[in-house]
Image 1 (cartoon, rainbow, N blue to C red):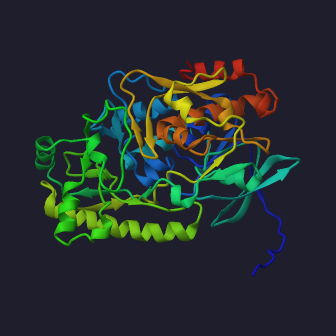
Image 2 (cartoon, one colour):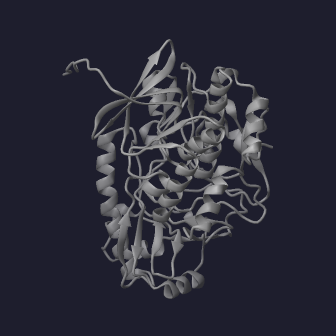
Image 3 (spheres, helix red, strand yellow):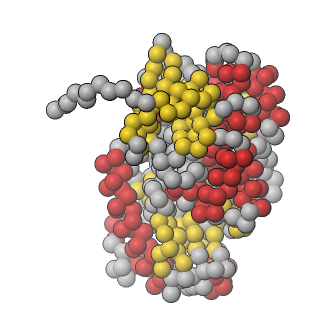
Length: 452
């Protein structure tokens, strides 16, 4: 059954050069990049904070791939880490040469960066629909406590993670079959942990990336990763299954912890993995949010019973929303390939680099040898629509390339590239697919981005 929604007039509440939908690492970088290129920018976010996967989901390991010989991204993504460190919003990340971001305090870091850049902040507004005229996105409709509102923009950047704007605007997209999607995660943190006892137990029984393998899944590596330390936990949950505390069919509860604080907080617990969770389906999301929290509490009880240092611990918090790794992607002017991310792809329209880091679809390759690939501008350009760029994990590519480009720091590369491109196309009155690459790359270099 269907109903017909009556036509209505919608107030235009804001006009801007560039509007960015979604403020995760990609969207936040896009808005800052565009503003620093000298245009007016609005940043639309459905939650009450900026930061997306960092703050709303609670993924604090922003650069856990980084090691001594890593040739890493440069630009606003690295600035996130530097600014957080300066504001006391980090702690050393246990498996890498990086700093884990404090998800709560990073909300303040993001606020400051948005306001300093002169961006118009528009929190608590969910994207509802685009208005397309003559094959180009002209208007964005949002829904909020204020009802439906319209934002006029000369250029639109889709940083929703699920290509929501592109999909609803009629751009060509593809969606991973639900049975093949990377599992979703309900992130959580604990408090009341004895950090000395916990760390002592980790040191006495160190885990490696090879330990990720189990009867449920295998992990393809290059071999060099197998003996490297990983903050991985499985034994407490195996013991909990044997003791009847966790049902046997939940033998997949295991994973990594992110940081242990002197205060007794154990954060970024990535232990609950939910297969066939469709981040574009609210019913699937509802079911998995509920199931994920249930499994997380089983994990908490298992840690209290079987992990030294956790005997008096308790749940501190869940992430504000479930963490989604994989849904829709655009069909871009250029779709990246597994060959590109495995074999140091090079592109004339590079908007940044990202180290040889692949994490997903059963592959784990860490950038310990200095290898890296370039990210092409064309992977941000959706087919079938104008005035729109896509940033973050919904850019064009195959599954293996997605296992690299979906990572948060790479999302800042596509985000800053999209933001600068959108700004320059406005300033020079040219279509996004006709932008002068020398102009784009010059501004990205001015903003501190490494292109080659």
